[in-house]
Amino acid sequence: MKKITALRHAIIALLCLGINAHLFAEESQAAPSSTPTPQQTTPAESTKEYIIPKPQASRIDALKTSLTIRRLEHQIQNLEASGESFLTLYRPSLTSSTQGCVIMLHSDNEHPDWPDAIAPLRDAMPEYSWCTLSIEIPDIVKRAEPVKIATPPTNNTQSPIGLPNQSIVFARIQSTIDYAKNQGVEQFTFLGYGTGASYALSFLAANPSSGEALALIDIESPPNLSDYEVAQQIRQVTQPILDYYVNKTGNDQFALWRKQAANQREDKIGDFTQIDALPDRVTGKNSKQLLIQRVRGFLKQNTSQINQRKSLPSAKKGLFYESPVNN
Image (cartoon, rainbow, N blue to C red; front, side, top):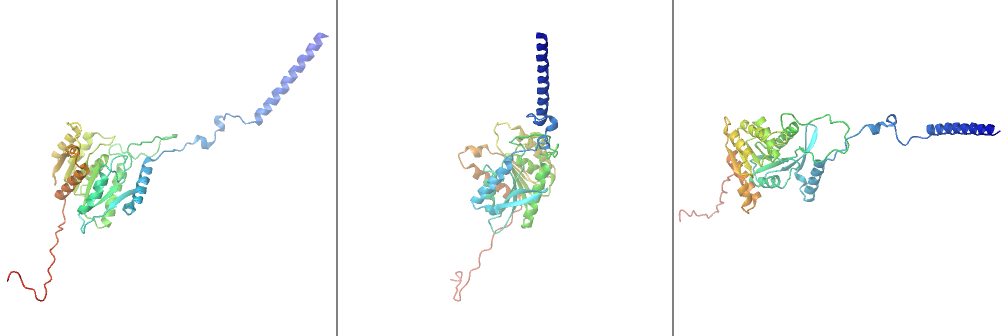
């Protein structure tokens, strides 16, 4: 009797386990899993988009806002090159005649009104009959890292041989020159600061008839080129060159290479003037004003100057005029 009872209990337990297992299977099919399998991943989750901060755009927007607050929005010119819009700050000559226009290129991670060198020069030169056009240059070193990365970008704007973004910058320079020509400007000079000086040097070397003079202010090499490679481009520039730099070490090899390259120029039509800016900056005087004087003097001596002397006004002689010579 006990054996029959134990057998019944065993059968009932097995039947209960079978029912519970069947119910659990049905619940598993009806309820979604909290952890998605690879097959359940949606296309939106598998396709990552670049979310890249744009510090340059923010920097340019802030500059435009600042100029607007200072009521200088009339200087803002949005030009176009290579299908992209870029900012150019234009200041016409403040005299009755225009010597020409200075095309200015700022350094990396800066903007067309950077206070170190570009802003004081672009504000001062119009007082000496030069218009100024300061161009927005794309960033070389990216300060912000991508938040999401799925696949590498398909476009690469950096040439393996030339400067980073070289085709973009050159197109912007040419677009700016075309704009100035439409304003009646016929003479151009180039001025670059930091890495912008490398772009100005390379553009004039590649386009020898585009300008009459070149001013390099604290020139710096971009990351993909050595100082020696940048210096060798001076051999291709026949125009007058001002090389205004700070000799921080006392034995600046980059400056020496630039001078050697200048001495190797053939058929040059202008001198290479190299000035150590360090004395100008440690005298306690206004170094920016000294910089303006250096650039102004260089352009005055090395470009075609318009004769601005005006004839004396004729004296109106009255009816009873008597010449002092006869008295």
